[in-house]
Image (cartoon, rainbow, N blue to C red; front, top):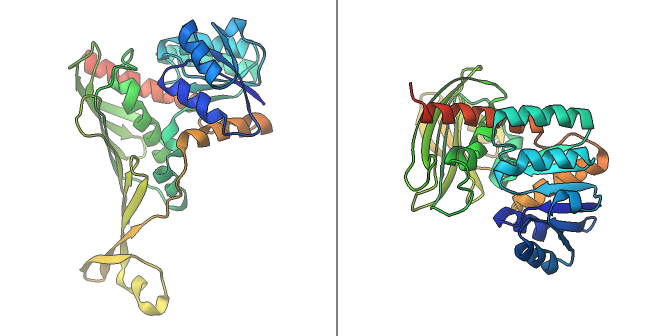
Amino acid sequence: MHISVVGTGHLGSIHAKLLTQHAEVSLAAIVDPDEKRGYEVAALHGTQWFPNVAAMPDVDGVIIASPTSTHYAVVTECLQRGFHCFVEKPATATYDEAKGLLELASASDRIVQVGHVERFNPAVLALKDMPVDPLFIEVHRLAPFKPRAIDVSVIHDLMIHDIDLLLWLTKSHVTEVQATGVSVLTQTTDICNARLTFANGCVANVTASRITASPMRKLRIFQRDRYVSLDMAAGTAEMYLLLEKSAIDPSHQTPLGEITTQHGDKVIVHDRAEVTPVNAIVEEQRAFIQSIRTNSPAAVSLSEGAEAVRIAEWITNLVTEPA
């Protein structure tokens, strides 16, 4: 299978390197308008450099990791040439662009996967064996400042990871948004807090910052019978379960964790989920390759990516144009 990479920035270089770990894939080309950088990355991986998609030979799929402002144009050209596409998040710079790509992708019958990599985080994958019915979710995504991806705000750069996770976890749509944010070092929002209300009654409080000294990527889920805490940086998942005291009777032989609290006929038990270490980017690449091979739906669809952009845009408008 022949796959090219468009963009040789931080993520594009990682994608190019990790593609070589898939035995069934050939890195067909590196595409970047910067000849020096493009040729350097191509030479490193024993492939060819091309200045643009038009000059690139036909391939099975393309991983697009160019600046967000170029996503719409690059994905459009790739779809028109009949290539399956993996596009890094955010899918597009605007929701209008995302709607345009949805129409084009539907007409082209090509796969478009969006690079919401946290779906493949080991801690998040541990949720697959848990009942998830959140009442309240709290998320913190904090990072030190890095002079890259500043063509978009912290909302489209970092918070959009968690917007996607919230939509995926709640399986519901957003009905109300409250948000505040400030610009500190760049011309766009660098710190933002948003409160999202979902149609199913769940409420989420999400904070993102790209000018914080100590990094943090944590997601906490509050449910009627449990509290789950995910550390996406460390790749760990732990929970506190509310159980009937009879459920921990030794005669039941129920494998449970440590009892932390007892009250009446209720107990709270602390436990840790089994987490299998994986490279999240390798896993999302594998999902893309599998979708192409089996002609199956994308692991993270363009419609899901578009909805994340819509909510990010809603938050952005509240921050930049407060009532």
